[in-house]
Image (cartoon, rainbow, N blue to C red; front, side, top):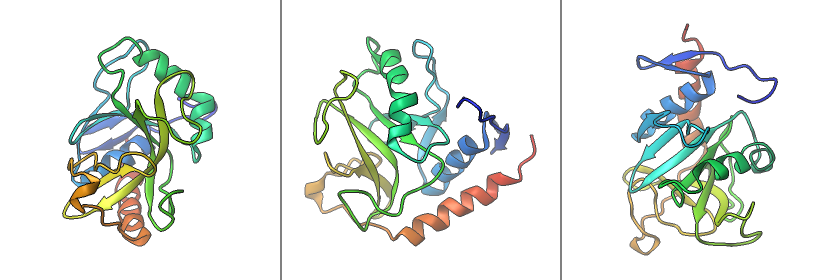
Length: 193
């Protein structure tokens, strides 16, 4: 829970979510055709909001933020301390906020869903908090299926598993992604607890 922000319990597909934002992301995952599990386990006091199951397992944290800096100031240290020493250390981490983004930094015309922390690689500012994760925008990919990749590190699609050498990257328009995001918002906004 973010200090001062109270989540509104919301139901989506017969499941109770702690906040409307989490329910909206669950709906978005459904619209994208992604497999996920809600609050799958407790890792030393941190419960990932979701696990995305694609080519690999991705830990997901959802907060009502709009910048990576907010996650860095309020959440990342807690997440890193929770996963260090567990079998989940080294799994990628997807940070999702309260919006989608029209343009990723390294892919100027590409919409992004949040920030992806890739383990064991450094770029730009490199290692954060003394842990070997490098965060950058998670860029949408829509080849045959919806997916996403790191905007400045490894361009492997995390859902389909296709690599950058496979010519798999087909960037959707921001309008295509925004339509899905708005639909997810409409479908979860008026759900009563």
